[in-house]
Length: 249
Image 1 (cartoon, rainbow, N blue to C red):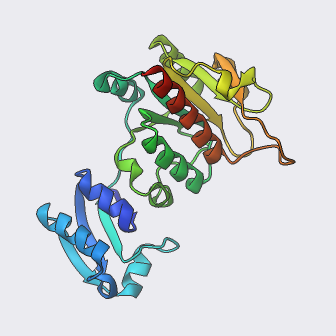
Image 2: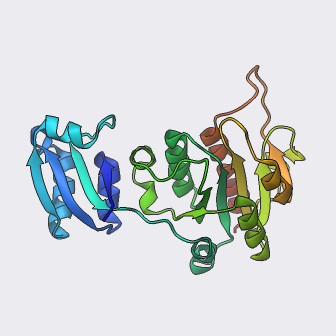
């Protein structure tokens, strides 16, 4: 069975709060009595999770390159949900759909930051492609700081076809890139919306762009001609929240 490692205080804490099955909890002996670690231990005890106290070096070996903050959780590998599962979420919540489609984001820290913002903005699901894009890695989970426990992620074979399926469900597709049809604040995000952002280097691919109902852009007033994709996602998502709050949706 494939396994995942959840690394760091907040990601582990949120995994336990969300009821994600944890097979084993590894705790650094030098951090065992820290307040945050004690909170994790109490949750793990109530869930019947096996716990082991290990040396700092042992924990470093379990999470090479990732700051573990004294705790690592071993879990079953996280599964992706289907596109149909994602589409059903807003109806279950009685909310206007809001999806985030990432066409080729390759940096795990960008994906983690986007998922974290998506959770804060109550996004109903994130959709990523199977190829030429980062998946749900340990670095993504660490950067997301626990948000992966609450945001469903669908991995699809074909982004363009998935956008057509969203359209059939009554969702408007808004791409985001330079030279758009309108500035992002002029778009109507109150209606059911899927925001499409491209990868760090190539942006939105042509076939995906063709499936968008319209393209919005963010004004760039300085000398740099682009924004980090995670920053752009945050700006757009909070414009959606602003518009919907104003309309009482």
